[in-house]
Image (tube, rainbow, N blue to C red; front, side, top):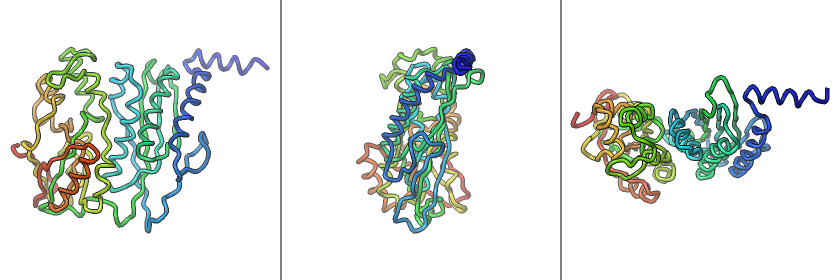
Length: 348
């Protein structure tokens, strides 16, 4: 009987799950998690559930929650052997998703599932998540790392997370404040962010036959650097002017039109001036290399726009100053007009 645990562990390792390696990874991960604790944190690191307090001083606090992943960007990370950025991508994407509603992030939980990942790879992924959480003064309240050989190919993984934020009910943004005459203020992206990677990989790797260390025309960036640029968070850029904001659209899957339409109230439409900005080099390479139509580009990619803030005209200057203070480039890209929840590009 004394040899049973060792035998079981050996058999489990032979089946593809190394408990000793998992324990070593958990120790590294626990250090990363501990570094994100905030005054709102409760309970112990490694408990079965994560706990955070709701901040004091709110009249009618509302929890805002979102769950998402980073899609096939993880395949680029695997190919490049870079594991420490996709976790930060995940956090920033999630922060933006609740920023759309005016919420402040207070807690995050991650889920890493894969097969045959080493201690360094697992730790790097979660340390990227922790770095994103620390930047937003948000607790990494818990999570899960699951080794699932048979479901995943050896060395492959997927990454997802859930964010919890809070906003006073009276301050929550739903888009109903948007009116004709409001300005669409574009906030520049750092690249593809976390959407469109299936098509981007097809164009760059399959059609153009580019290697990760190849230099992209115009920008001089390597393919790896361009594709793994961290998804930008807009929390610091937008938070100072939130009381004057009428609506926000996070430009993710579905592009500018698909996401902007989600926040338009009845009786309004949006007109986007396609001449108000130039496509960044990466997007031009993708369109030319893949022979993609303008319509497909607009449906799949953010085209260099990570966030659209809808504001009254007299709030635009303050919003641009706030964004510039955080290093975010902005420009007026259109306006709200009367219509029925449609988004049109001009010229079409």
